[in-house]
View 1 (tube, protein in one colour):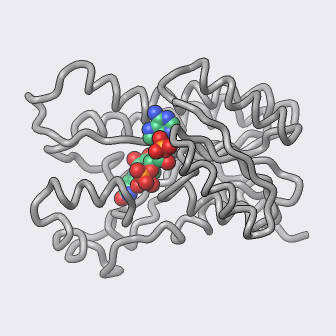
View 2 (view 1 turned 90 degrees about the horizontal axis):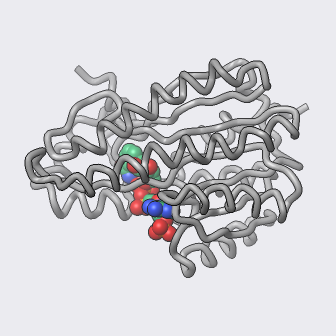
Length: 254
Ligand code: NDP
């Protein structure tokens, strides 16, 4: 048996229509899974499905706003309606608003917390009965280096990503009995739309990342294919509640 084989598995990747989410979705598709990409932007959704189908995979898109719990539940139902089961959920959709702490409105705080943290809880809750029905499952939550470190310009984001790690541990302990493994992935600095904006907004960021990252480069979305397959496959059946950095060594550099 190939422990990384995902044939006959069905996955949902929130924010799977671009960036890190699409990098993960491609990994799952190449390993044989049927993949549902879920995002707000219709054009990006359609392009991502075409991309995954070009790899020979079964793929579908669901339009979702993860800040709306009803929309999250409908996404799970739509994926099961389309492919008949749900085995893998990757909670990847995320956003950031960069400001000094005194400058945030409460609405901005809620926007970041709801997009990054509450949505992951709601989607996991909605996925749980489907995974039990399938005999088990895999949930992967996307954290950040700011799950570990502070950032003066991203306090709500760091709070949400710190919460992702603790939520992951709680769900992992609660659902181990259901054969559902729950893990977090903590990306370092990766070249995506999200960080392109950060590079524009935070002076000197590009150079600081290169200097601080032992691998000497920014991550690319393809760097996430392997970890997605590993944490979605039988290869990781005895691994749960962890938070694994995919960061070129950023978090171990003194
Ligand atoms: P992108 O901006 O490229 O992707 C973000 C994705 O989230 C998009 O696909 C977007 O889809 C989706 N999304 C955002 N808000 C919502 C919403 N309300 N409802 C549904 N979908 C939504 O960023 P990245 O690929 O960089 O980020 C992916 C994850 O990785 C995030 O959780 C981010 O915090 C995390 N991360 C990224 C790092 C990096 O260096 N890039 C570092 C650490 C963590 P749409 O446009 O269709 O809404």
